[in-house]
Image 1 (tube, rainbow, N blue to C red):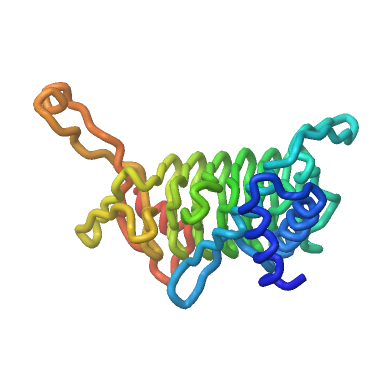
Image 2 (spheres, rainbow, N blue to C red; image 1 turned 90 degrees about the horizontal axis):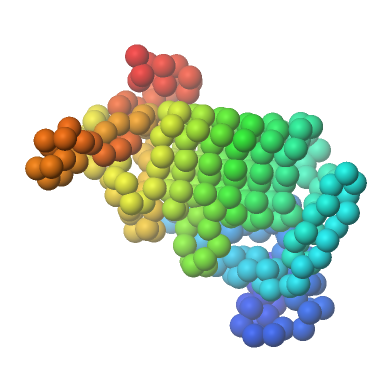
Length: 277
């Protein structure tokens, strides 16, 4: 089935309050196969920037309309929607490594060639992880999140997911970015290529990003998400809390801060070390 035909089938089924179960399962199965192969994505780069494919999210939501089922895979058991079975071993690229120790890659997630997943980690449905990227221990890659090529997600990084509203941009981490341990990226934030996010940084659309190099303050862009500029090095910072009580109490608010830009010759570790020194 072509992508156009799959899209038409899913849009038609999603619009029906009670679609036939066999048609629903067949359409969801084809969508999950296409997502795993990387031929269909929840969002993708285009000449005009990132484009959200809302129909893909509708298809994933269609999968959640099914009933519950239990799958036995001794010594484990799984209970999930009947249209989202455990992933077959292994249905990814030939050079993907999923190191033993409790990781889970959900049905409908794409892992590119050379991806390494360290245990335990979780990659949710609709997520896309580009080639040669590293997913370290205790990392969450949320539903429909888009991770580029040669990205390093360090230990305990949380990349938020989004299914609804269907037109909302998911979290995007572009090629060659580095995200330090314990960082959190949420609410449609886009980390542009070669950016470096220091450990402990939290990025959301509701918290402004301050650029000490260019003297600017960044909030949500036209897509509704925060955009970290290309090559930016972001560290945790603070700003004074407003009001007389806050001043008298010495209170401050969290603020992510760009302290430098990574040059073409520096790797992520060098850029971060220089920024924090």
